[in-house]
Image (cartoon, rainbow, N blue to C red; front, top):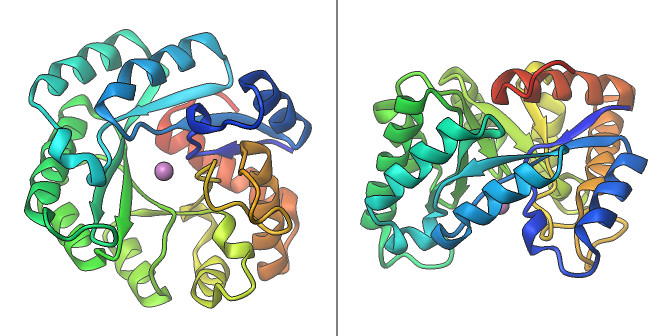
Length: 257
Ligand code: NI
C-alpha cells in the first residue's frame, strides 16, 4: 500500500513525536505527507520540516482566518523558499472561511486573490480551504486562477457543487469526515467523485476518523479514509490508494511513485 496524506498539520500534533508520526504512517502504508501552512509565522517552520524529513512536502500560504495578518513582504519570502526548495510543492492553505467570522470577508477575498496570482506566477498548484463560502470560492477561482491546478481540501459541498467544481477542472480531497455516521453528503460525494479527481487527506490533528473520533488525528489514519471510500464504492482499498496516490504525485509533482 502506498498512500499520500495530502493535507496534514503535522507541526500541530501534540500527543506523539514527529518520528512516531512518521513511523505510524509508514506502518499504515502512508509514505508521503504534505504539510499546509496556516499562519505567516509558520512559513519557515514548514520549510524546515520538509528539509528535515524525507517523507514531508510543504505548502506555503496564509489561511483565510489569518488573512488580516497577510503582508506583501510574504510574496518574496514564499518566492525565495519555493525557488530554493523543490519540496515546496504548492500554495496553501488559502481560500475563504465564512464560518468563524464574517466581519472581514473582503480582506479574505483580497488575500485569496493575491495568493492565487502568486501560485500562477510560480506555476504551483493551490490547496483551497472553503468553509461555508462555496459560491464565492468557486467564482474567485474561475475569474482569477490562470493555469494552476486546484485542490478543494476537506471538500464539504454537495454532489451538485462537486460537479460544478469538476466542470471548472478542480480536484476533490476527502478526509475523516467521510467516516462519520451522519456525514450523508460526504459519503455521497465519496461515491460519486471520479477516482482520477480524488485525493486523500487527514487534516490532522483535526477531524479524526472513526473509530478514533475524539482523539488526536495523525497521518496514519489516511488509511481509514481510504478504506471507508473503498467500502462506499465497493472497490478494493488498493485501487483507491493507487489512483489517489497517482493523482497526488501528478498534481503536486512529488516525483516517481
Ligand atoms: Ni488544514
